[in-house]
Length: 324
Image (cartoon, rainbow, N blue to C red; front, side, top):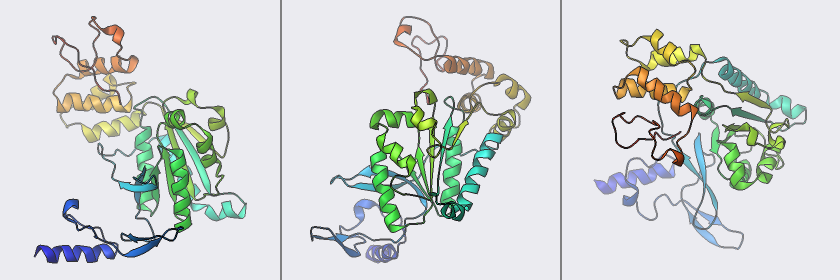
């Protein structure tokens, strides 16, 4: 019976169907081998199942043991996605929807079909949530989302994708682009944003908490980032919809709206967790969260009673909440 199940899964894999729920360690060494791959030096390698197109989805880039650049599909984990319906979010989505529908107009005018958007603002205001919504939309419409940590590797991958799938819509995500540039320099990322390798049908989306750290060559040059959006604390209408979705009916929405005024989206989420899930008081929670957003823990606090996190006032040692 086990052999029959395995044989069926191998046949399905050869048709491009996912391998199912059989654990990786139970698969035979030759699982899914389908074709010979040819290297430039005349070496032939047995290849696993091949596909003409990548499955729609989100991908990360990694180097294998031979130093080759590869893609790995990821399924982002996290809290249930809340769909922002703010004026700024709506503007972003309208711009992107128009962009994808105007490929022919770009070509007729002699331009690469590419666009760049930069979202900036304090931590926790919802930049990542907006990017996640955009990613979900493009995947649903047969596109690819590539998360970039290394611009040079992304450059290689984009070239490979375009050699195989010339027209596939691609969204490249540069989360915390200032950190990427700090680690890898800006030469390759500028080439990517400029379309130096003629990679089109691409939307580049970046986020940063620190726009002042970005060189003017990044933020002040159209056709690199054509639209730059400041993402502030959530609008009252957005916050109200979120609290309606998350709070039990017994909670007073008017009180929550008033007491959480000015808090970031991340802080409001934490307030719900602290009160609804952990049983803390709303007043004490908001007090702690405002303290977290106004300062950072420091070694200079050793020996003092500066409160951070959600430790009890009677605790001998202080608890520091991780900053996300």
